[in-house]
Picture (spheres, rainbow, N blue to C red):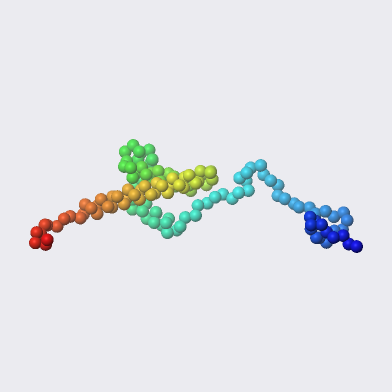
Length: 138
């Protein structure tokens, strides 16, 4: 009578005596980041083109220090945005910092857009003028 295999042992063909199965593994590095590929940022091409166009149309940017000393709030935000963007693009920026930098970059862009929207709204309000009052129109 043949032995019935137990539930724990897998059914395999008989191996010749003296053979063993070897599993080769790549040597493990002590550096936890050695095997990981560097992170990269994926940005929509249309968004990049829109930002580039806005940058070309805008006034020359100041350094963060110059903008803080003698610039407007918008100029300071633009300088900070540019500085943060440089850090995000830098390959030497640690991966652990990218999330915080990217979040701050997006917040800064939104603040600049809010200032621009307020300025456009104020400009539109200034252009609108009341016509002459006509009592007969009532």
